[in-house]
Amino acid sequence: IAERLDEQNTKVIAVARSKDKLENLKISNLIPIVADLTNIANIDAVTKDILSENPEFLINAAGTSVAVGDRDTFLKLDYKDLRYVHSLNFEAAFYLSQQICQHWENKGIPGRVVNVSSSITQSTLPKHIAYTTSKYALDGLTKTTALESGPYGIRVNSVHPTVTLTEMAYKVWFEEDRVTPTPEGKELLKRIPLRRFIEVDEVVDLVFFLLSDSAAAIQGQLISIDGGLTC
Picture 1 (cartoon, rainbow, N blue to C red):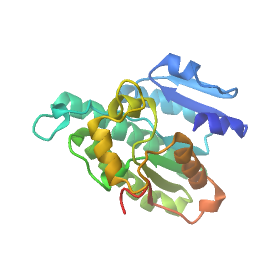
Picture 2 (picture 1 turned 90 degrees about the horizontal axis):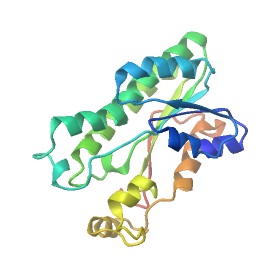
Picture 3 (picture 1 turned 45 degrees about the vertical axis):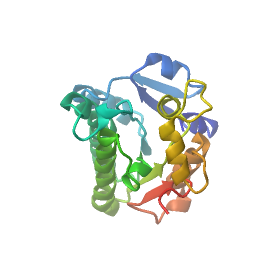
């Protein structure tokens, strides 16, 4: 997403825990912010830096999960793992959105928010309870923010991809060769009518549509991009 924005000569403010990840971005007009958003104490400082650049949109795309396995089941998940996943997948998006939307409302700026959720809230999988519940919370944030900020001209929507071919997906859904799906990956592919996972560019295209004027009448929607998983 950041690199596509850069192609359009848009100033990009990117936040990540890893300085290396930011340095690896091929972006000419980048404002990098190294911060751990699972620590709420960092969010005020990050928001201050973001607002100093007068942003017109916010994309909440940070995400993490617990390793697939019994550790992320209803009866086995421990509080530490639950809190960690929720703090990044939901709470960071909540507090960033809250402060930035407040700024937009005060200044009369018709900002746009896109939250990156997951098809898992529309077609649940076993052994992903921390991730699933965090994304349900994010969906609630999308709906409520759209309802309350809409009168100020602020548009809020979310995209719901199934497995998207990112580094995290390769670690969770593929064998070490990065070609062969794991047994869990094979089972999931059987449930997808198109029998494939999603390319990163396909998600980026949808995010850009929602940021554009072509989506001016779309508000509070949870939009699937999942190869038919949720048919």
